Image 1 (cartoon, rainbow, N blue to C red):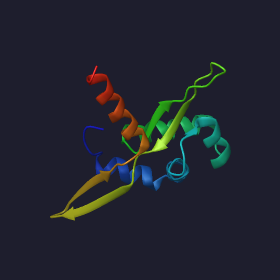
Image 2 (tube, rainbow, N blue to C red):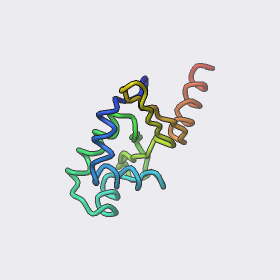
Image 3 (cartoon, rainbow, N blue to C red):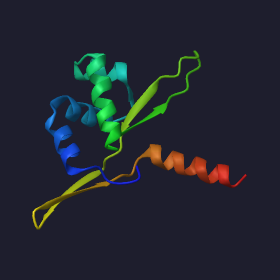
Image 4 (cartoon, rainbow, N blue to C red):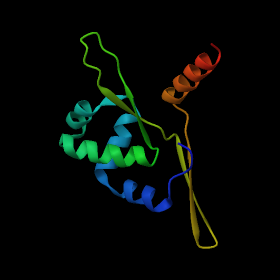
Length: 116
């Protein structure tokens, strides 16, 4: 994620019970949309809509999980370790602290590729 999301986007997502449930579920382990639908008791279409919004804000990331059966589902993982909201002179500022295995893996892959 290149820059922090707008406070309005983050506040709207965190006000949504479905988005909060998905964010909480994906903070434990990466999960497919179907797993999230079952665990969070919501329709797949709701899961995908909320995941799109969470991804747009950088709160969740998707990656493809390789499987032996040839079906390679996307799994979703929370990217937020810490969310800080500051109010200074009437202006909100939101910053995210991100430390995840997805980012660590991506950084290692980039380092490996650049080293070739």
